[in-house]
Amino acid sequence: MTTTKRNYRATFILDNRGKEESVDQLIDDVKKEIAAVQGDVTAIENLGKRDFVRVTDKKLTGGVYVHISFSAPAEAPAQLKERLRLNNTVYRTFVETV
Image (cartoon, rainbow, N blue to C red):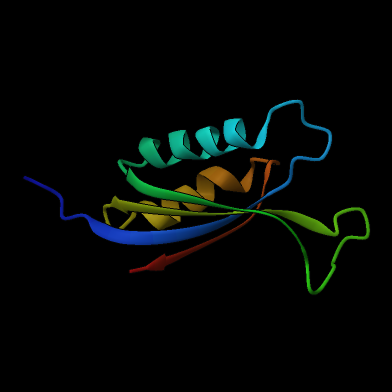
């Protein structure tokens, strides 16, 4: 039985404070997490470091914004958010259906 894949566009805010890895390595880690939930990455757009409009933590006033487009089964966004919940390099995740 084949699973039907849907197209998604996810926005990730990466927190690279105190990390030795480059932003590209952090993006590769996120791509591996998408692949772990049977997702196929189709496009990546690095928007760079931006300041937050509303600062909730005085120690973190901005982050690196990345848009990743991918196709995956319907249950993949929930699984991806759960996998990234404990990952301290991904500050926020927003997944929308395209």
